[in-house]
Length: 420
Image 1 (spheres, rainbow, N blue to C red):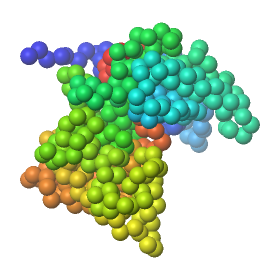
Image 2: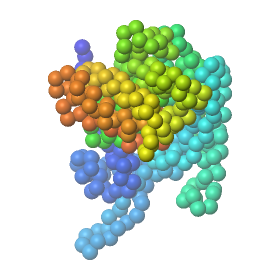
Image 3: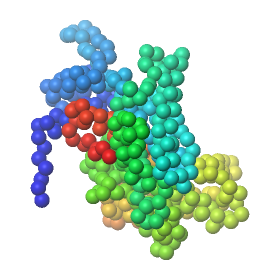
Image 4: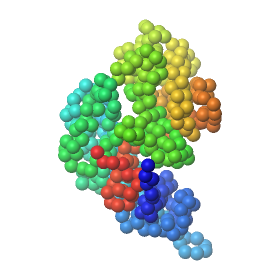
């Protein structure tokens, strides 16, 4: 098998990404700060900074003087370079979030959807919610007291790139939903938007968000488990997102947890998602207490929120408590399988179910993983709720779109996603 050799151009590309990442995390830094953070040489940092300044990606923030020597100039990312939009297309909503070029969130818009909408309707939702988010961004920019004074209102002309996260993969199992079908209409979507777009799935998006803004800064091999309507795992190995031969890696929610178990929406029986997805958790509650008032009649998010409320002292609901205990066992056993295969340093839980219930789930999940992981696979393994808050899918897919823009302008030649 041929081994890909890294060229000097690739090395310089990686250095630019390292410096960009360091500036993103620091907010503001001097060249010497960047040398210390990245481990790059002073000469390399100086060259990279010149490239970023020339490309308009970075700007000089201020000059600081000391008693000895020349004043020091600090740098920051140039948020006014343009706008990046991240669009999270889920089963029950489409949400567009506008970021500046420093990946600071400016505004968003969301529309509720029906998972039975056809692909044309999904495309309409994406176009409409993106325009609304840009309008909201313009309003935020002009509102007094927002801290955004001097920023021009966003329009399509300001957009450097759009990242669109589409769930995918269920079509092959007979459980296709509208967002899956939209994969075959990307050309139409590109034509309707008239903007550079990159499309990826939410598991790659959450892994990217964790790499740039979360535990990926400190761990080379990690897994981010997404809990919501669907369930999946964004996998990072040695600092690189695992994609697989057909970009399908991470669909752990459709791996087997119980032989001939509950029917999953994908058509199989016993999938992880059928036990730890939102509807799976509702089914667990119904099995424990068939007449429980929370077992039916609410949306998934309302149901999960109501579970969290029912766990609060001084009188936590016994049936809900048992539901959480069982869910933690299911989740811990399923994660133990991931640990046996991937052997990560860190696992984070993300998604709206994790935000609501993670504090209740994590202790029992840790215990279960420790008991069921083979050998020393879980030795030293950390399991936590992700520190990347907000919509991590929108943040991650916007970051992928920014990486694509950097590739388009020639600043990055490696780690650039393929535009679909």
